[in-house]
Image (cartoon, rainbow, N blue to C red; front, side, top):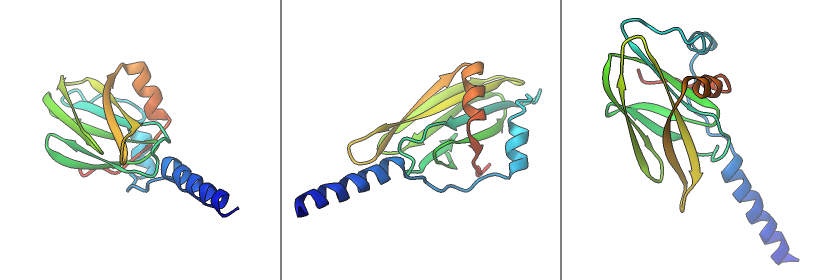
Length: 149
């Protein structure tokens, strides 16, 4: 009986780790609503990075833009950055570090999906540049996280 109890406790702990929710600082509802209008700035580029999954929800994942920490994503969150045209490097840091480079043009909007996978000791991450339709859909499923810029 004690053996079965121990297994049940272990299962509950594992489920909590996989499905729990990480708490990250959030933008205001007004900032979220404004970003979801997807209005490009003619002099800047917009980059949306979104994490529209609950898997690995207990683990916040640190993200940097051009070598500076932008903040952390949690499940069902996104960042939106207005950047100058040119090359921009996005890094996602979990059990692994992944880089994605974008060559951004003025007046354009770019979408990056941050996928979370099971790692050996904690979550792993993958960054995918996605098309406009998939990106907008993913962002609309999420809430805007607060970014350091």
